[in-house]
Length: 327
Image 1 (cartoon, rainbow, N blue to C red):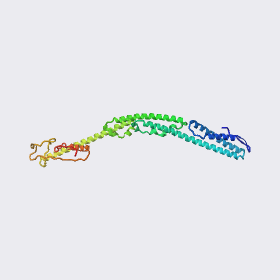
Image 2: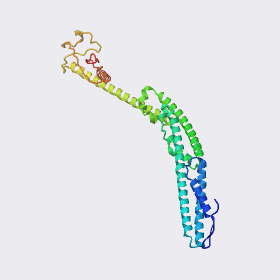
Image 3: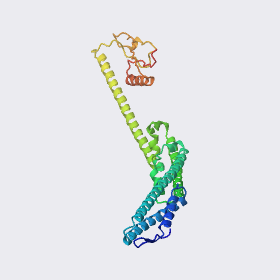
Image 4: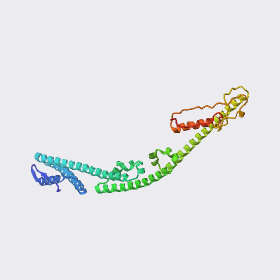
């Protein structure tokens, strides 16, 4: 734009204001269009600077005119009108630049996040158990385009970020597969110890191996203690049964007891006892069946039968312990 000139000597003697005004208004009207390309943004920025310069020129011209003469209200009013129009055009253009640039940034970031989401969906089931928040964090994409002025520079920044994410994803996918294979190699006996698969897959491989060893060691320790306690209980039961046999034998020997039957050797339930095997004055003992009905699952009932067998296997009065389903 040309420089604005106004000279006054009580009347306007020299001014190019009309032509200058038309030139400024033409430029203002030229700003009223959508901003799409980088060139549009650059041109709009230059117009903002030019309009600011025009505003300053109008203010300076008004001040100069006031100093030159007092009766120039019409000129002042026109200057104020043009100045206000220039200001409104500048502010509108600046807002449009800001809004449009924000829209472009959002669009570029959305496209990048969509591409990453598709990449994550292509990975295996083990990878799906991992935490994906670091790769889908929008702030990470916003940081990548911060300070970039053109759409092309933003797109390049997002493309570089996606390449980095792809490298990270491929590495984590391989590690997830390795950790899955490690969990799959665990013996079936220990598989109930590792039901929290998601948290295990998210561990580092070293932490996973340590956790596996710790859980199995703890399980084996508990199992050994349980077996030792069971064995001790069985030995105690056998000892108590032996004491009962000794007491019964002593009672018969000294005549203090009055047994109604005689002990038979275990395993000889299929023959009648020989009267010659019995002490003098005693009759052949009768046989009895003691029945215990259990309402439980087959495994629980079988365990109870085993406990009874263990408890009474050394009792010579007990000829047989049978386990059968009650129909």
